[in-house]
Every structure is written in structure tokens, then in C-alpha cells.
Length: 299
Image (cartoon, rainbow, N blue to C red; front, side, top):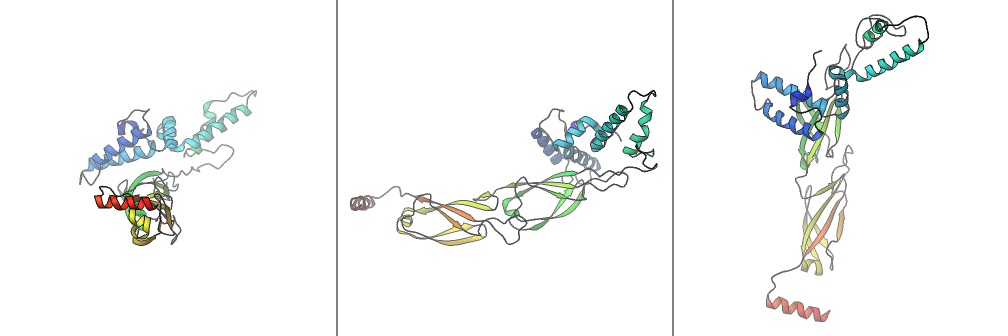
């Protein structure tokens, strides 16, 4: 397998930070995206290279393996295991009269990494090791409204369209694993998985904390003092609330079950917490001032 310099593909240095990798990937992905370069085979190939580089370098564990093992990074664990067993083999034969060369381990490494030699420790000849395919990483950008209800969406990954069901209540930064939608395995090994990270922008007036929602509702001074009704927004529409007489600024009320869906618990919702913000009247007329002064004397 030819070595591919993922750092060079993204135009970054080897010491680049995670933020640098993300910025470089987004810039190049926009430039070479198939939608912006229809029927351009070179742009399509470049787009696939960029995605492959990002999938490796944006994952800290994969990046560490790639930096150490290069093109063989996917088999890092197998190499580490092979090295350990090789050291044990050498250690167990120290002090004997025979001299062991690197050729003594050729059969072992051949069997470990897909060759046709005998396995170390007496395994049968001709057996090749199956390797799971590379995991793909993708990032899906949505608005908060998009994840209020379960829905289906098509995601393009490495030139393939994948139909996904996005569960209601998925959270910002959450990663979902889709089995069998990654890279092809080696030696008839299983396919890798697709890991989707959700980046959810809050485009509403609600603050979200898991399945609970928080918002502030303004009420006028007179409603706060005398009581009354106020119409407030929830995620599913408007509701009418009774305001108690003498409601103080910052008073909180809870609307049970009017929050956000609980992830993968159909029909279950969090709560909506409302804080009242009492608006003090300004620019009073002379008559209003007189009335407030009379009220102050009565108090």
C-alpha cells in the first residue's frame, strides 16, 4: 500500500491542532464538494482524499497510530501485539546455543499481517488474518428545531448516500455509530463503522439542558401586581398561563412535559422552566406619577 501524506492533503503541519485540522478540512471540503463541481472527476477524487485525511487526523487515537505506523496505522494493535510476542520469543531463547535471526520471525509476521506463512506457535499454514475496515467519521450540522422530532435524512459519505434515522432528542456533540458503513475490510474482514458527530445550533429563544428547556417571559408591572393572564411560547406552540397577584421579578414556573424529547424514550419529554421578567413602566405622565405617589402613601 502506497503511503498517503494526510497532512499534505489538508495543507497543514504535523504539529497542527485539532482546530487547525477542522478549519483546513472545512475550507477544502467546501472548495471540492461535488455539488459545487458537478461532473468534475478530479474534484470528486480530491474530495474523497480530503474526507479520508480528515477521518484519520480528526480522531486523536487514529492520528496517533498514523503518526507512528504511517500507511499501516490501521493495524497498529496487531503490530504492538506482534512486537510483544517477538520480544517474549527472544527472551525465552536467551542463553541457548542457537543464534536467531530476523528470518526466524518471518512466518509469524506473515501470518499476523495477511501472508501465507505458518502462524507463530503452531497455527495452520495458509490462514490469513481478517482485518476490520477503517471507521469513517462525519459531522452533521443541524438546528435545534431539526432534532425535536425523529426524522430521516440522507447523508453523503465518501461519495455514497446513506439514509439515516435521526432520533429526537440527540444532543450537541453526541456521536452515533452506524455499524458496517465504514471502509472495506481486508482479507474478507468486516466493514468499518460510520461515526457521526452532531453539531446542533440553537436557533431558538430557549436554553437547553439535556431534555429541559429554559426561557424568560416579560410581564408588565400591572399584571405582576394585580395578577392576570399571559401567553407564552413553548416548543410546540403557545399556551396561556395565569399569573398570581404580587408576582416578583425572577419568579420561576415549571410546565411539566413541555420541554425537549428524551433521547430514545418515545413520548417522554423534559420540562419547560419559565422565569418572569417584570417590566417597570417608564416615561410616566404627570397623572400616573400622582397616582403612584398616592399609592406609595397608602403603603
